[in-house]
Image 1 (cartoon, rainbow, N blue to C red):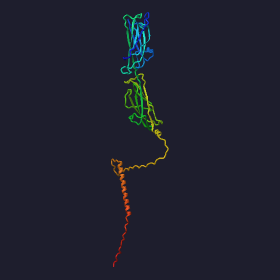
Image 2 (image 1 turned 135 degrees about the vertical axis):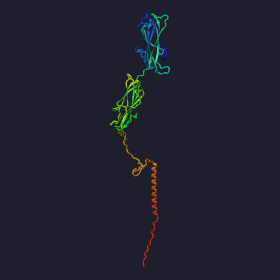
Image 3 (image 1 turned 180 degrees about the horizontal axis):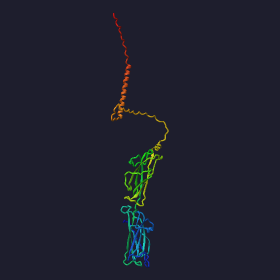
Image 4 (image 1 turned 45 degrees about the horizontal axis):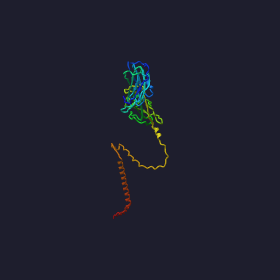
Length: 395
């Protein structure tokens, strides 16, 4: 029970009648007696809803509620000076009607009280059940309306409860769809919202189903996938699917042979049924649905769209001729040479061989030209005459 501001309403049912008339109901016991009934409903309307009020109502603390009180004379004497108090209410109850004044045996008086349940005094959290108890007291009187000798007030009490609104079960689900090129058993999931492939190429769709409601979900089914097949689970998550949890699926398919210029885009949807934690169906809770799409675009269409229009050709700088790359030597036939098992070349060996070739060529050129120059400068040799003797004659 909450602490609050004490308030009391004292209603004196004065105007003593010459003879105390009997109320609409017979007294239940000999002597003075009184009972109190307290009900409550949400809202403020001047007590008009008291006829349908109950012993409890649903409302958030801080929201308006109306309490209703019925004080009934259940004894054999008249009752006067009826007092109704509700110590946790900030206002006093208002008298609506009374069957008689003083209140005859079997008669009743009705009151209402508009109130606002306060936040919890301890921590200010507005989420707890609010219970308050009211009391009614009355003074026994005789038929003339005078207090009975030695009479003491009779008292009764009753309580009403304001509960925080119950969280209504709500099923909710979302679907996230992605797609990528190729088939690999869904290992590429999740993927991107769009993929580029040739028409007819293999593609894989990925689906992530997430429970966004307050209930568990089961009976997950798909529709409008664009292919006549069912997605396969990726082994993540369990059914019934708890709030906030996800399940993942994949579907291997093929890109259409003909795709629109803006891409092929099916609109898959998922449906799931609301159940409790054990998997039992929740009556009155609608199934949850969600939808999402991914796009498959043709590479040919993308290439055509991505071509940049030709620009006017202006003066251009002459191109700088680059040194042609060295030509790799042809491989020798296995009939003439035996290649080593492993031969690795680096740029250093190529440069060294080239440099040695250039050096040897330069030395050869120098030697040849030096010999020519020397032969040009040296004088030609003078021929020496050779005398030939005549043969001697015999005597």
